[in-house]
Image (cartoon, rainbow, N blue to C red; front, side, top):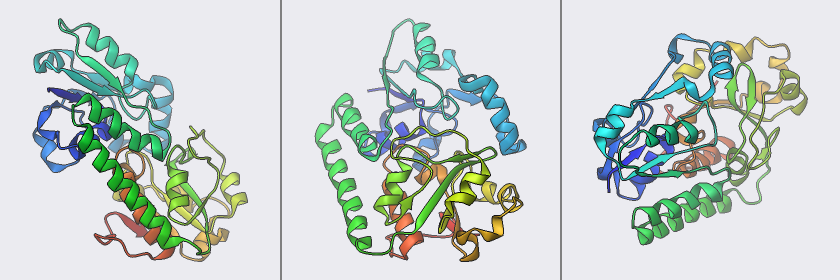
Length: 299
């Protein structure tokens, strides 16, 4: 089967199902596993996020939404995919289903379009089942799902009975945006008490006063699409705010910069690794492989 993935998380899912060799097209943001680097790119971003601040990116996103991304319809047609994977969960995270459907209608032969839109941990893992059926490998999918559930159960067992710190997770810096969808469940599974967002919630921007009032014991900074280095370059957006030094998380040295795109922002199998990383951050639970500075670093 010839697969084009227009969603980085879908590329992750295809890979874990052992079908990475069937990928004939991907987005410019698909960066895992390493072998997908040789797969042709069929999308582009219409802004240079590295040259803009969080506030500037937000302003452009508010006005343009999914038009932040373009699809090379000519290249897509030349690749002749049987299956195109997309999403309709967030217009500023990836090409939306609407834009993909419009592009596919321009092709002579219409491939199947499968939209993956999980909001919870169970739904993320359920995408493996859905995709496994679509790719003809349901048994492989069932085995991968069982393995991932087993790892989550192991984390829950390791942190059972421990004090649960109050945790705020931020998925954007300016404006401030709490991490919703599956992230509160990741925090809970890792032995924390998530604040300011409910499991499965599609969140909205919030005020700094809300963070101050929440008085988190731990503050997780994991902006969508930002590497830890990129996040650290803009941390003054947080540290310069009034009341920063008075937050319990700051006083106790429990502010962490995490690799959001790899383990928290994308609804793929690596959210389980993200949960294991959080168990190390919150409770010093050892993880295998160990959690390195590239994945989680204290501020």
